[in-house]
Image 1 (cartoon, rainbow, N blue to C red):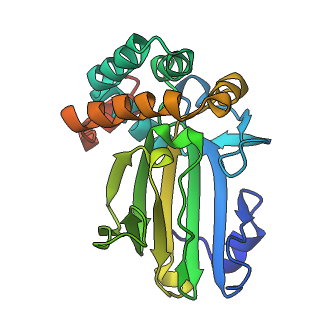
Image 2 (cartoon, rainbow, N blue to C red):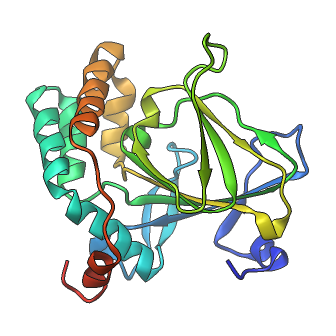
Length: 247
């Protein structure tokens, strides 16, 4: 959090993103990294979280964050295996692709660090891309507001205020939502981490080709599994154990 605004904009790690050309005084920067435990000391080439049709080189996240995501997978290993088993049981090829990625440790490894500041910005309503079939979001600094569901619905959909320390794990590829970023100056900037499923090009191609009749049962399996068996966050001690090599 000590990086100056000038250094941030000159950084080769962060990319300037323009989501709303009509709001040029809202600044949005994003870095694409990875949390693949097996490649924790090296860069990898993978699908861009922003544009899954392209590939980018992703450096590993810092060691503490790498350990956090590995510990997150460790403490939820039974849940993740249960999810993989239920996806496999659908006998859908598309579900089996997701099952394989979960079992090889790809959950929460496609990482984007997002920084917002400047004028208020109301994000467009959207479903996330397919790498967000399983998605963990961490708010590190600042405040943002997440609205779940169609904003034109009646009664109005729920809005959750996310502040530093807030975490959610869900499947935003399967439901409408939008985010509001309040106006703030650089020292109060909004910093969040989005950790998604690292898709292979083959899995992406398979998922993009399927229709609603296939995606609906996959979404139901993931939704029901996350509802039945709540994910837990690792303790500081569990993260330290991973950092010490006791993963």
